[in-house]
Length: 153
Image (cartoon, rainbow, N blue to C red; front, side, top):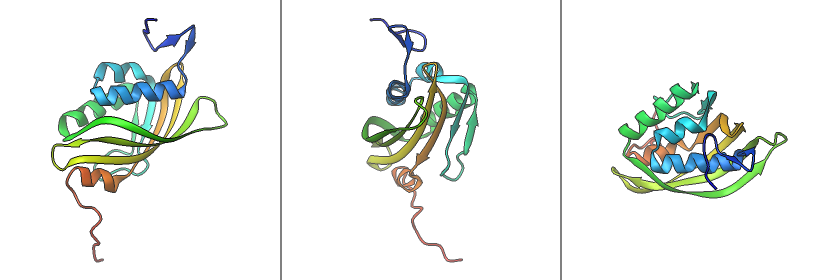
């Protein structure tokens, strides 16, 4: 079966679990085209535990995908696969909570595991809202930064 557009299968749109898998593939392959297909025009992507210098909220497909692709060019991190720890449904059938680990290689520090939690809402086979709770200490370590050092007031 050929999949096109925003991935209709047997006349129905992908649900949040399928959209999650498409998001993971696009991130692993660093595919700007697939990311643009994946996000709704009016999507929101939030980072509630944002790393210093990272925006806590991106609005609209263009802003989100431009920020993601710029990050791909600027970062030494390459995602190679994802480990799913758990996927939880919610009262909204279009929303899931995902406990996962991104596994990859950093040109700076070598192999890394980046734990995170995502709350993903899909509408019409696209990401409408994504809250991405990245472990900022693990991300900093993968980048070669140590944020865990205690600082005196």
